[in-house]
Image (cartoon, rainbow, N blue to C red; front, side):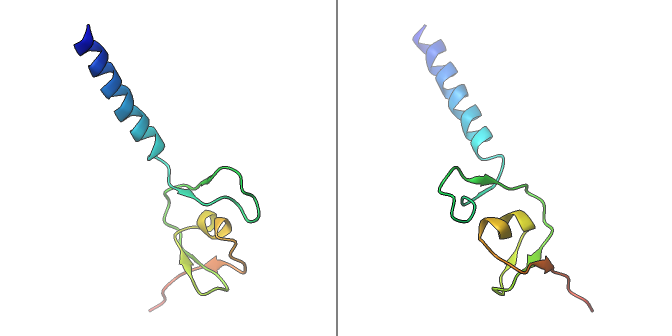
Length: 75
């Protein structure tokens, strides 16, 4: 019985870790100390007025960046 409980506990721990790390998160929205913002793991870079290139607009919004536009490298 103890072995079965230990295996179940271990399986639940791994499942919880997989769920909690499956979606990247950014800090809470500007001025909102609430829960973290869940941003998709999509690479669609934007560059903002602060000169930083963010991996997508969700991360830029979470960082309170303004004046963002698509970031492309032209040859």
